[in-house]
Image (cartoon, rainbow, N blue to C red; front, side):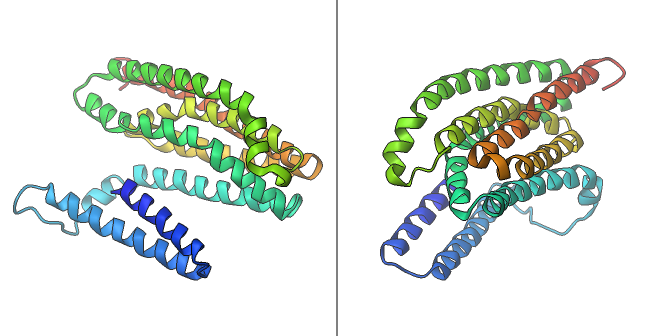
Amino acid sequence: VQTATTMALWLTLLMLAIYDRPIVEMVVAAILLTALTGFISAWLAQSQLPAGLRFKADFRAVRADARFSFGLSLLQLSNVLAFQLDRVIVSALASPAAAGTYALCVGLANKTLFGIASLTSFAFPAVASLRAEGRNADVASLLQVLQRVAIISMAAILVPALFLSAPFLSLWLRTALQPGTIELLQLLWIGYAIAAIGAPATHVITGTGTSRLAAVFAWMTALTLLGTMALLVPSYGLIGAGVANMTAMSTALIFLLLVRRQLRVIQTPGRA
């Protein structure tokens, strides 16, 4: 459903742009398609429920899982704030044109992170199932396998991406290519590759029933990103923004180490 809606949104916005329609119509189209996605998803979910079972308001489950849900909400909030304010900082401390270039490069490089996160998202329900069956040792094994997949995938993408950044941007942007754009994209490739390696750990640790660690590191990443951008962008422009992004994404390695430590605690008899 989400894939079909995304394609429909792209085609709709493309047609509106071709016919030079105002941006208000584009926003309205996006809102309507998003709402339609929600209704269709809810209908499909209900159709999978046993006959006679209906949705009802029961807040006991909400109260029972309030801490876990609150942690996930904080995690998502940090991502929303960080990856919107970073563009504001670049625009304010460098220039609106630099912010546009930064947003373009981020939109290209972060596809690696989203790809690995989507590819390994099945780990969340898989880990929950393993925990329910008491197979705690298999949780760490699953993380090990997913990490290897992420590392191999990133190695296959990162090496050509670094070498092809210059010719790709030169061909794409031509005279609009700003100084530092190539270096920015290369730094972003590295930063998001590091984050992608740590992506499976987020699914695994939340699958164990705790969201605190992921939420704490999401905010650490966000604050590191915004803080280093405020320090580096005024002096180093786009390259400073790239270094700030790579520095913030590197916190994923610390997060990964702590997740591994937490999983060892879970495996220890009497401490699960």
